[in-house]
Length: 177
Image (cartoon, rainbow, N blue to C red; front, side, top):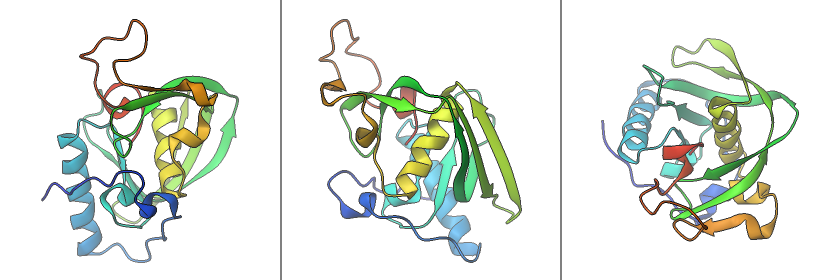
């Protein structure tokens, strides 16, 4: 396993739709292991493969209470319902957070590490937010495209009443990779 360097804006890999994984082989397993280690090292709760420069449809998610990470290969959001506003950040846009619009309910289908299809649904919680955030990455979209308004993006530590010691990304605090 290895920690891979994180890609930051304005790297164009972040704005391109990632390619589907055709075969889950040893290289894909190695990439996923590296992504999990990289996510942990960065104190994130989610990471998409294009955030480590690999334009493949793979994401890993591990919320604070999860014992094991969830691996999503070729994930697709198949249903969204409702709307809510949440604070969010991204490992690829370090030092900033913003208020974004996210769905209240999300249903995603994907393949697991074993190649078997599964579905995951989440409602009104961090998991729903991270699922949407990571699938957005794989579709070439960043959270700043979902800002409630342009003035709802701030540098960490500059928002009134914000604790300077707060994690620099919502991956660590309240959102996905």
